[in-house]
Image 1 (cartoon, one colour):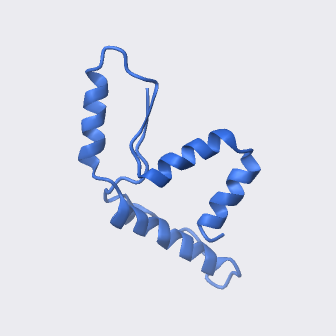
Image 2 (cartoon, rainbow, N blue to C red):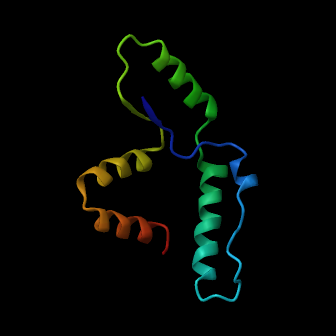
Length: 101
């Protein structure tokens, strides 16, 4: 069984390490903008972990559970569909553009 929860509102952001060492790099601005945006997505837009745990409990109690479950926000669910139908390179370009890279 696979549960894809998307961004879950937990304290994971507080444990993320900013590992980009070269603050003078030409890539730093883009890196930092993306890193900060991902953290904000989890802190502000993440789904409630209780919702995920309730789904898992429901799945455990099913007689014939599905193989895959998606719990994330609509855009995250849609991205899973896109990943399945688009060539890898096209999907990566869309993802990079969405993340400002």
